[in-house]
Amino acid sequence: MNAVPALQERDAAPDYGVLRWLVGATFVVILNETIMINAIPRLMDDFQVDASAAQWLSTAFMLTMAVVIPITGWFLQRVTTRFAFGLAMATFCTGTLLAALSWSFPVLLVARVVQASGTAVMMPLLMTTLMAVVPVHDRGRVMGNVTLSMSVAPALGPAVSGVVLQSLSWRWIFLVVLPIAAGIGILGLRRLRDVGEPVPGTVDWWSVLISAIGFGSLVYGLSEIGATGDHTTAYAALTIGVLGIAAFVRRQLVLQREDKPLLDLRTLKLRVFSISLGAMSIAFMAMLGSMILLQLYLQNVRGMTPLATGLLVMPGGLAMGLLGPRVGRVYDTYGARVLVLPGATGLLAAMTLLAFLGSETPTWQILIVHVVLMVSLAALFTPLFTMGLGVLPPHLYSHGSSLLGTLQQVAGATGTALVVMIMSTRTASQIGDGVAPVAAQLNGMQWAFAVSALLCVVVLGLVALLPARIAGGPEAGMDLEMVPEVDPESVECAS
Image (cartoon, rainbow, N blue to C red; front, side, top):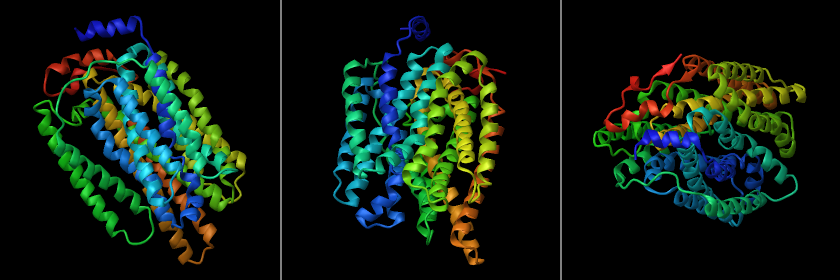
């Protein structure tokens, strides 16, 4: 069947039913990436572990995502939508049940790895299906709804756990999530329809191994740099990670000549996709870094409870989700620039204001700045997701979404490691100069927020390079299916 008439047929009568279950499932599974942040002190007491060990509950989640996601580009092309959805939700629910029943810290750590394995499949599955189902003219609006799961869920994780921990055990974080995830999984599996046809093919196991070593070592090294003590192991892991990723890239370039890559890097030859990918990754880095810093500031400097902390950041997360569909409609009508430029500017302004937080800053000011931060991210993420994936030809959707998910995890680990390292270094320096511990930590946080603000300058510079719209959408790249290499000029952009 000709691909272009098929797309025109979808334009005429799009069916978004398949996306509703994928969005709901993705929201639930991604929520768990940050839901453990507030529970770290409780877990340290219950399992008698130190902070560096407890932090591995979040680090292991990101590490697993970084290892598994590169494989999903190949995997999603070989199985049906229903099979991928069922496998992802069954894996996630198994990990969630095991986490709730954990009798030791190692068991809980394994449970988090199992949870992350299911999450790693859901994210690219949602994005790949969306690009296949939704016509070009409606992608902004639909992608705005998807923003709820991709971006708001991590922002709401600490708020949800804060509410639960106020009166219940940390095990209830998982016991609350489990029936919701299981219900969505069962009902979704019954009502989902398959999108597209599986493509037979074999996997290059050397690529899988090199990918796991490269991305896994990189995320591990970045996470360990933020910890106190000797960083020899972290630097060794970073070196192995960089070398592993370089070897992975080289092997994919060789496999592309036979059209058999595990992760197709020809997506990076499309300028709009590369710029969008860079801007999203750096913005996500700033977002996760600021989340960690703000939690530490509110609890360690201001002495707020986990519940109060969660409630304070909840309005920003809700505002981000509620604005998602409206941002999408603006994108469909006016294009990207009217959103990404103000969004990047607001992100820079909010992060700069956070760098001036003091021990007596009024709570209402912190609330407003956080809402501005999250609204600015909403104005950024939806257009960047839509435009970046929109320039790809259909046969590269799964690879583009996998690359996006992988770099999100690397960016998250980088952002967390960067701000913690800066904060810790500056705090130690201040204490050495005789400054009181709390005041020294506050100064360290201010420095870390300032560095995050500098990252936002880079985001602003990148989005300024984007066109207002893309011309032709995926149809412009149809000819790319017939050639072994992607020509960057084959996708025209309207300025």
